[in-house]
Structure formats: C-alpha cells, structure tokens
Length: 253
Image (cartoon, rainbow, N blue to C red; front, side, top):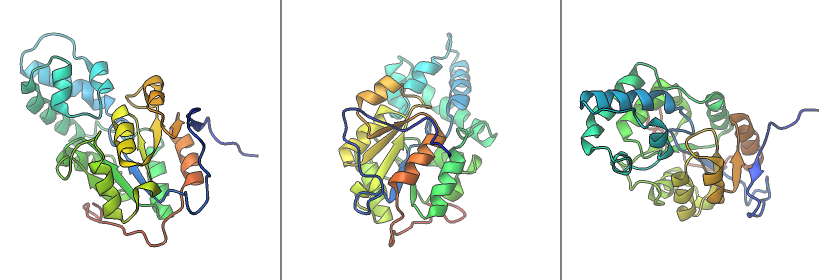
C-alpha cells in the first residue's frame, strides 16, 4: 500500500482544515518564485561576487545572509547588509546574464508539481518581489512558463509583505482569497498571505528556516516537493468557472 512522502506538518497551534469539502477546498495556487520554485542560491552568490568585483569592494560576499533576506526589496537587502545601493545595477546585470546562460534551475520536483496542478485545471499565479523582466526570463529559462497563468511583480502592484499582490492575483483569476493558498519559503510570503486572508503552505527547502517559518504559524509546513504535491491533491478542487488569464509568451500572464 503506497504511503505519503515525509510529510505535511500542520502547525500544532492551528486547527486542521477539512481537506476535500467543496466549501473549503482551494481553487487557486499562488507561488513565490525564488526559493520556492527556483533555486536562486545557484545564481545569487556569483551575481553578488561579480557586483562586488565590479565596484572593487573587498571581502567575501554575504551569500547566506543575502538569501536569508529573500523576499524583500533588493535595495532594502543591501541596506540591511551594509552594502552600498550602487551594488544594485551590477548585481541585477549579473543575475540577468546568469539566468540567460541557464544557471537558474528549478528545485527538483517543482516543475512536475506545477505542471500537474495546471493540468488538473488549477490556475497558478506566481507572485514575486523580483522585477518583472527577470521574473519572466527565469520562468522561461527554467521551463516553468507554460504552467503559469498569472505573473505579478512590483511592476503591477505593491510588494509583499503587503497583501496587494496576492489579492490582485486572486482578482485576475476570478477567485475569492479564501479559495486560494500561498506557497512560499520566506516569512515575507507568509506575512503577505496573512494580511490578505489567504491560507499558507511554508516550504522549508528555500531561504527560510523551519523555526522562522513555523513562528509565522502557516497552515502547513512541507519538507519536499513530493509532500507538497500530496498535500495539494488533498486540499484543492479546480473551480468550475475559474477565469484563466493567459498573457505570458506562449499564452501565459
């Protein structure tokens, strides 16, 4: 008899939801990008190092601290790390080049998760604080673009951790926030969803630690993409009349 993969960990302080009732089932999936779908650690370190070198700044790039702040605005990350704002242009340039060269990759299993949910008829939105140009490039370079219906970035709405980006994604897809679920790897993702009244799945394979994510009291914690796939199969039902927005090249937003 098959068993579920190591597993879905509902936060002990939160009540469990009924899993498949029509009234409570989720009908829209909101995904963060870096650290959730894409392993940004493969490009962050080299990009930071290139930017430091271009400005002739000494020292070892604070890659782990940089990634730990994932999800917030780049200029704020630089300020928190006592790095000059002048680092932003060469960092973005280096990151863009690395993405084009194929350095960005998905976390193993996440393309399968995204494709499976799309094929089930569940609308998928990516909501990210990364700028739109690099986000589109990353989705296309990693092969995820065909499975994404809506992409929202700071070009269209206020950044996370405010609720605007997530609420805008729900509005575009014609689904009430309480029928959506946010999947992310950072406290920024979880706080944004809480502000929007949206349930959360915390992924612990990205930048956030289990301790920090659990402190935000997500509805669920998952340890690997296989567990996420199993959970989504239990808590989601495609909306009968969901409006799908198809604006990305090849048909997606």
